[in-house]
Length: 101
Image (spheres, one colour):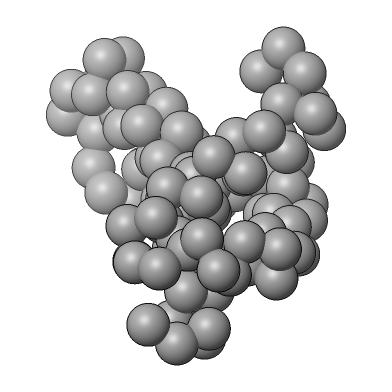
């Protein structure tokens, strides 16, 4: 696997870790509180959640992904190792930046 492919899979892991919590939270709001909520009510909630601290965390995570790939490129041989590495490092960084969330 090429270095670019490893980086892209690491970024995919970061993006999964970045998008999953607000999407699940927004979906919970749309389904638990108002089962008849439409997609048009769902989209503003997603926008609000994504414009909070998640944008800053993701930008920093992409930089960290670059550093992780640079440091671990010999160990990251497959796409799934790179994906898990991205998931892990984004979670660690998010906890450091915003502890308790």
